[in-house]
Amino acid sequence: MAACRGVWQEGLPEGRRMGTKYLWEKLQTLQCHFNWCLERKDEVVIGHVLKMVAIKVEHTAYHNHSVYLAMRAYLQQVQGNNLEALDSLREAETRLQQDHPADFSRQVLLIFGNYAWIYYHLVNYEMVELYLGRISEICRSLSSPEPYSVQIPEIDAQKGWSLLAFGFRNGEEAAECFQTTLRGGPSNPDFQAGLAISVFASWTHSFKFHLREEARRLMEQVLCCQPQNYEVKVHLADLLSDNDWRRSMDLRMEVAWNSLNPEDLRNAARLWKKNLLPRAINTLREAIALDPDFHLLHYDLGVCYKMQLEGATSEERGEILAVAIESFQRAVETDPQSVFSRLELAQLYGEKAPLHAEEMYQNLLEELPTASKRCQQAIYLHWGDFLLHRKGLRQEALEMYQAGYLITGGHVKERRQLEARLMKLAEKFEEDSETDQAEAVFETLRMRPEFQK
Image (cartoon, rainbow, N blue to C red; front, side, top):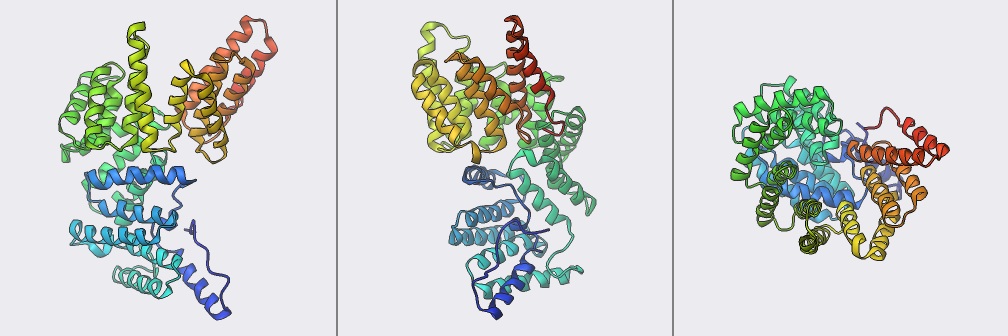
């Protein structure tokens, strides 16, 4: 696989430049984070993933701590923090020796590969050669025909965990990794859990029925071997929420009572907020007590308070609005680059401070070129809502909804919301006998690329 980053040093004397290029070509064959083409569009993505990796290092239910520590090292190097990256790799190596003393050499290739790349960027070619030599020795001991790579299940699993850590949008590719892993070796409960979560992740980005059923089947199997796997339990509760509500409730209750992982509690709260909002709020507060700096907990708490606004009396509304704004402000404080927290905050400010809200939207619009596809969709959606409902600019709102809807590679949730907005506008145009405008909207709806997720 071609390396996704790194350039060989051209500004060197001829002999040394050729040697450096030779090293660079070897580095591209390593099985490590630098060569796996993990999606890292900008600092926003890197910062978010680093926060999620920190939670996984602390709370993972699997023997994959070293994978996340090595991933942290990769991200730190991308940010230019090479010395911190080396510290993370040393920590990863120590943890791997604790978790996998019997098969350390089969598991350490990822760490050694990251070491080699980081020392290359530090222009320490002697250390690059050292780690290339260690990798080659391990590959030779495993009878690999390639000098710097080997086809073993452990590597595929490490890549699968890494893809999931970068986001559930990578579920399909992660599932392929775990499928390869399970075909290539004896049954491993951690790998089976990885496959189940990967298929679930794929479902969350497509909502295809066959993926839902496959994820449910796989998760039931995992829980037979790992009955205390609360990550799988809360995802299974999600899958069962429509057709087995009682069991779904039991699963999420078990997670809330027993898990100390704030991400598990967050997922349980997200299920409860549909019909048991006070319980969702209490669960999020408990999760925040475990990790006060986890920005998504504050974001979700703000969403719950925002939902309470819908049924609030005029007397209650002011107090609920204040705590909702406070939650989103805290989310922005803990993650200043969070697009969704800033969008929610702008929407709430739009009620009493529309000029301030408009300024926030304008700042977000300036960030469109570097935002992820899903964030782009969300910005167009919220700005369109503001134009329509706060400023009464129907045509301008239509243009924003159209721009967001036609983005390819975004998320199905935002696309469906944009589609619903366009349908409502088309109906309004028809009611007002603006048939040309209505037809233009329907034409946009027909333009949706079939490959868009």
